[in-house]
Length: 316
Ligand SMILES: [Zn+2]
Ligand SMILES: [Zn+2]
Ligand SMILES: [Zn+2]
Image: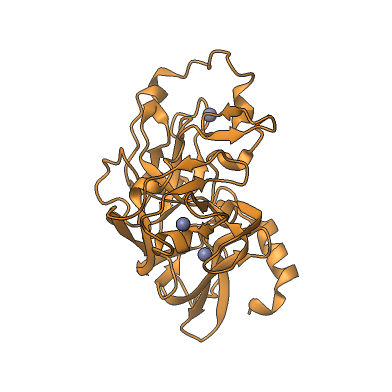
């Protein structure tokens, strides 16, 4: 059993292009944000193990290498969407309790923590080095000070973005019809489960509803007018699919392959040999046909039901 499932790659994680990226402007240009919507599986001809399918905020949907043949096309920008939380940690800048997403701890000051947003917004001394904790159970990774490092502006479905219905849309004509734009007024969490995982959108008729942008790996929206979403230090984000080191109770360290570990069987045994065609398969690019093949596979009816149950006043 994986001692920390949140350390693996999960649907719903928010990502940006990474160190081995060679796919042009599929992300809409560097700084464009996307959501992991499907995980590779052993033996899958289209999406082999250690690849992921990403739905970019601006609409492209393609698969990428997350450790496949040793290559990492993506960086993890945010994992609050899969429910990562540090229950007893407070961000010493924005004062949020139970810090969500990655945790950044100053190595110079005693007991000083930042959330991802505050860290990337240059809060605290830029000359102080920080440790990054990917989850509440991760072993810390020591980073260089932020001073003088390249910081890239984020763009996508953030507050102020102009959006239309996206690939997982199943909300009838709440938007006033396909292609009718609305405006994102807020990005927030869904109940206590997930953080920064849904967007509140106001449509032309003045109604406002919430839609999934990462919650349960679903993306209800597509960006037609991107908004600025802050910044990120490219050198300080983890590579998606890179082996994560987990803390053990006795202080030792587990290594995982950065995937969900459950399907691999006992450690130290040989991996199953994959079909030849899967091993040679490149990411398939943004073809309409392959985009279409992912649509409508897993309708989130349970989410709809819970939405009705929890927030009936939001649904018109
Ligand atoms: Zn903060
Ligand atoms: Zn400090
Ligand atoms: Zn795997």
